[in-house]
Amino acid sequence: MDPARYLHHTVWDRGAKFALLSATILDKDAFCRGSGLDPSNVALVDVPHTFPVENRPLYDTTQGRMTYEHRDETVPEVARLVVRLMQHHPDEKGLVHAHSYAIAERLRDHLASFGVGARVRGHDSERRDAALSGWKRSDGADVFVSVRMEEALDLQGDRCRWQVLCKAPYPNTRDSRVARRLEDGQWGWYYRTALRTVIQACGRVVRAPDDYGATYLADGSLLDLFERARHDMPGWFADQADRMSTPDLPAFDPGAAVDGAGGTRGSGTRGGSRGQSGGSGRGGRSGRSARSGGSNSRDPDDHPLSDVWGE
Image 1 (tube, rainbow, N blue to C red):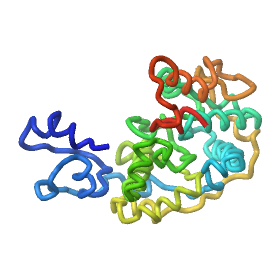
Image 2 (cartoon, rainbow, N blue to C red; image 1 turned 30 degrees about the vertical axis):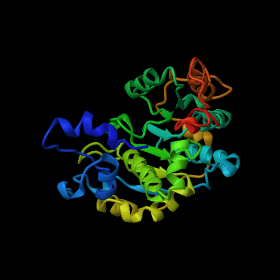
Image 3 (tube, rainbow, N blue to C red; image 1 turned 120 degrees about the horizontal axis):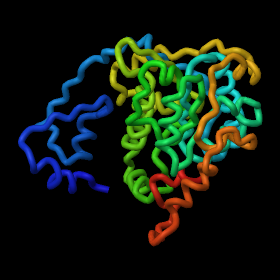
């Protein structure tokens, strides 16, 4: 609950001056409180974004809400959106941020049932890195359905030109530490944490001033997040959000999504009942069982990643 306790003896006590570089500090005072720093001894140097805003567009393609109670009706619509985006980007790789293995599996199953599974790759918790590496090396226009790849992923250039954010990445309220913060009224932290993940995700497909990539928002809760966390947005991201528009996408036509596309059969997890990519198992269940067994008897629902591993 208090990272500052550990940062003092592991970091701050080991030097006199530090330079911390990040695009997502968001709020100086909140960052200092969480890090055990005195705001009066900290200078925040805010520099403009060097990537042109027109090279990193956001698009409102929301299909409904991806909260648990609305997910059954929204996931099929998100899958249909992905098909239309595949049509819109016939020769370009795409990345789908599914948020959890359960959502990823359902999306892949829907995409396979639509007949576009040959252009879709995925991964489970065990073959995550291998599946990602294979997709990045491929020459086709495959779409990679991913889980927890919003950060530390470099998809510069033709490695990826478009991506979809399927769900607002709020912290898991079933985790006791998150619940405790909210009981203490730390809703600002809750919204900042989600906004930070969204900003990080948007940067996966635009890695240089001359690079470009589009980000499509599929969950209506993302628009609510932008309103609630507006005061914490860096100016350069606020400009990006203010320019958000609704794209003119082709009508749903699964055949057009694969005809003429440069997709190749992947080596990641299966995309659904057609089993086009020969992976080692269904991501949602393998991800959960790999972590909930063994000597650690902690309730899997009381874990910060339980919404990723399970339903």
